[in-house]
Length: 426
Image (cartoon, rainbow, N blue to C red):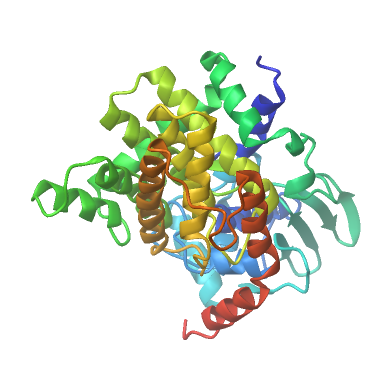
């Protein structure tokens, strides 16, 4: 079973990441370019797609309490460890931060919008007086498709024409039915990465509950439960644990998490609500592992059509996965899991993405609340009818409609939001 294609898909899309993946991917490109450019750095130029800029502009950089695309690039160039991929900034020191800040203040590190149609595009050029190195990442946060040094192409690694939808694994095999069949029959001992995601993301959630990160959304929910303003129920517990993980991550926590489909927040939102439900329901470890595997695979299934970056919030997708996992823990089968999807997509579709930042934790809390509600309704056989809006009789067709909205109807939203973000007095 370890060679099952769904195991391979999980291996591709569940990746340990330190910090929000957009600034970290920028740091990775800078660190890789730096390996070809020893000595003094005169200039670092980042050119990135709108989606990357939107998600990297205001989010905390891991190991710091700071933000900035130019700062992330500078840190990657002077202290990044490119071989660590999405953990590239692990182990940065205070003196590295000071040096990087000076580079930004002096205009050594700068960024601009790239002229590209790709949603995920990062180009970093590191220059000295007479030399330069350029690294390009496309389609996937670690997919280095070009390394150029002094005008010579050194490497065209990665998958130059790869998109999320056409990776080496056949994502067409993913359906709700095949996912549920897999989750019910796989030897849970083979789900190593799923178990690791539970351990890492739960730990991040507990860290967010214990410390003052960002907006303290999760911590505030927990505190209000303690004084009796909120009930100590499944919904509050799930919202607190999920939002707290996002609080910590968006504020630049140095604690790694398991990302799903290129996003740490998606990984947290697909995992922690299911963990919280299992704790409240008294589920076994095996039940939890299977439920989280279901959540991750449903998330990957929808994201394979939705795309890595969108004008709509990706947590709506991962919380849909979580709702399926919760429905599973409530004893639901395929019918109830599909009903949970119908209920979620009929509810949270349209939540706008205005970049990665502290406020994401509130969106995580909102979507988690909807995930619990949707699963509880589904467990009673209640599902939004196909007479409602874009909901179809078949949950797979509803997913297709949802992804069409995300892909075809939101380009103007993305442009407008980015314009508003870029025109702020920063």
